Image 1 (cartoon, one colour):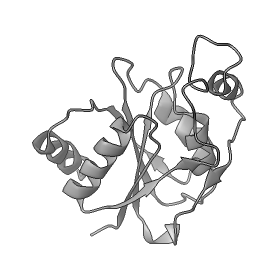
Image 2 (cartoon, helix red, strand yellow):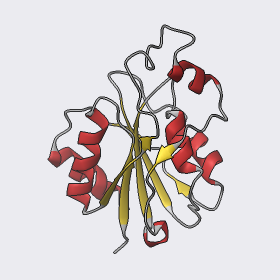
Image 3 (spheres, rainbow, N blue to C red):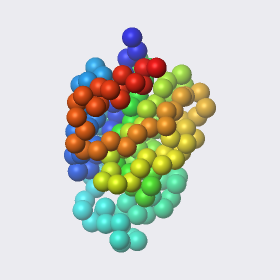
Image 4 (cartoon, rainbow, N blue to C red):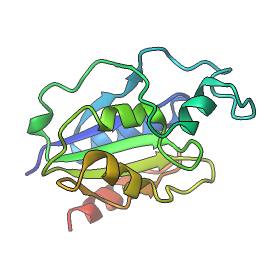
Length: 160
């Protein structure tokens, strides 16, 4: 049986809740991707072209500093990566996580939370960040109110 990790970034708590539920139903470890400087409401104002998140997301090479690290990433075969969708993709702080480890030989399963935006082409972007020696699934948008039964059906379907 493969060892699994659910790594996630959450601001409002929605992605954290879903990530913890995935970890529980799939018997996985959990790791929160935390920015060194937490985001404030002003930082997340997408209508302000000078807000922190707008500036970060405008620069595809932006890698905001994070705190903490995964101990012994080598032990994991499968890594779920969860995040809210920002500007149609994963937040830049998730990119920091993805470029901080060697994912060679690992399966990465992205999932996003969003009120309406789909995961889009995020998997292609993640693949470009982790390299061709990792296998990146297409991923899935999960609502904040997904049931444990539906999560179990989804994760069991991934085994195939």
